[in-house]
Length: 562
Image 1: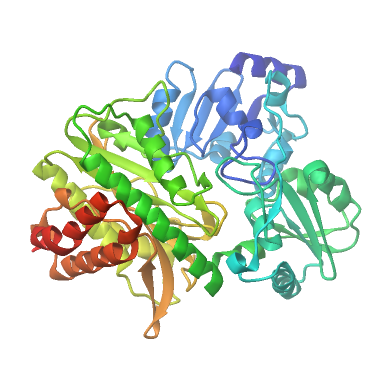
Image 2: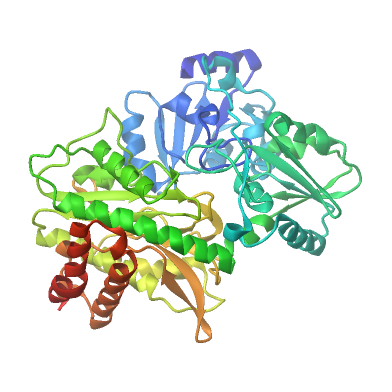
């Protein structure tokens, strides 16, 4: 494929061609039609940038995918560039070091962020209107437009008219006459509509153009009409959302139009859930917690002769969720046995699937889309005896997880400061992890949403009451095992400061805990949390699982930590 692309590059006089992971709306998760980087490289992770030059090809991805990318790029000739590692330049920096002013850089403007495109154009001759991958991609899946359906006020808690009014207030504050809404989650939230154009994410492809007086929405057959429509605008100020507005959207605006690049006002409003959304998502998490608790019980009490593989684990978690009312998964399930657990975003396939047998750690990161909420949970399940070294590692992760869950902070605290709280017990044991500690979660939307993030890159990003953010520290030992524990947390006001309330309700793995490493406060937190899990989800379980959970919460558990 790379050689075919180079032939097209020669035909167009292009020296280097940049292929991002995004679609025309800046999405993290995309439909098969837009998986150009995956098609060209074979790397299936959700984040990455491919750069094809005359003689070499390089793929950038972050620490979540280093192990996976190394395996999937083997034999392709594509060089892995480990983003964030010392001495590794980012794509833009690398291009500045290697391309001369007379070299030509190509990329497809509809899939590249407008601000990145602007910076690249200042340095290089660029060709942005040609989709070279589309030329050589035979049998490329089409963009499928699914049925769009409304979501009621009993789940959203606010009308579209009210949301639009609040967006217009922000537009007025920033001096914008128009706002182009590109991000699909923003579009779905703003209009209280959902679809299924992207797997596991209930959104639909489209754009919106909002003025101070009215609004227009472009979807399905009208999806691509946005470019022509905004080209009519003259002598006005248009707000474009950072990270989602493409080069093609920006280029469609007339020279008389003043552009404002700003954080999406819709995203900021969407991140703070109202009381109805919170009540609805709590109901979804109860049923999801029941599904995962039932799953853990079954795994720990399965017949020794029962054949279990990573893929059958995926099937079982989905089956149990659907019994609890889930209409879809919120992302492809990560079911990773032993050494696969060290591949942070590993998802089993027919080629990689292995038996879950003997003793070890099973890491399961999964979630569901329910009619009233989106869930994301990770549990590491211990099967058989757990060696002391692994107990220490698991307990360090649990301590970091609890430290963040118990954190109390104020409006001046940002996501980077909170991140250090979760890492400290893990760092003290001599470990660290190559991913953020937490990301925002949408309501009936994407499992990954901003602006809230708990991560070293979260400087200046505030976690505010009403925001839902994950808490998921981990330890990963390449070739051996992986551990991650994840709950969703709701930020709340408490006695004049901010704190967290766990939404996820599912027991921890007490067979992997070294109680000597826990403080009394940590023990009390676990006891209180398990009691809440039992009282809340217990009656949703089978009789056997309910009795197991009761024993865990009321007797055996207390003995283990004390």
